[in-house]
Image (tube, rainbow, N blue to C red; front, side):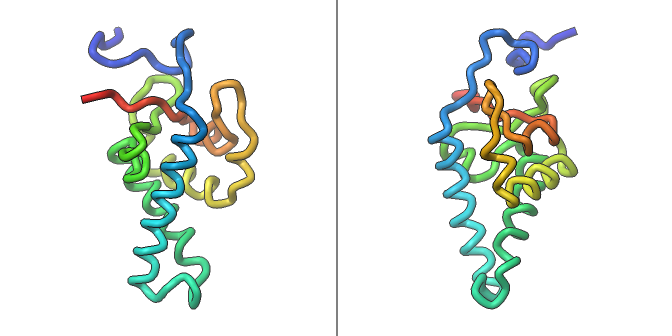
Length: 132
């Protein structure tokens, strides 16, 4: 049974069109700058180069798992949802997606739905955020 108030799951929606790469990249830049600011509070990324990517992974895990959006995604009006049902991906898969995104290479190899390897392994997809 489907909920008429929720959009169709991206995997089963023949009209699904992913957001532009520009919006995705913009969200990543915003999130990266926020992670740099946070990591500088905890000792700086110069002394601890692993700190900023770690903050990014934690940010993705918590924000995607709980809210389906990072702060950068909120600003660029996109969200990350489950590929098969359109719901939240949860904290463990958010952490996995963030970890794989920190590696960068998986994000460069995309399919026709602009799902990188990190999205396919986390069973996620980036979609337009609903307008309020």
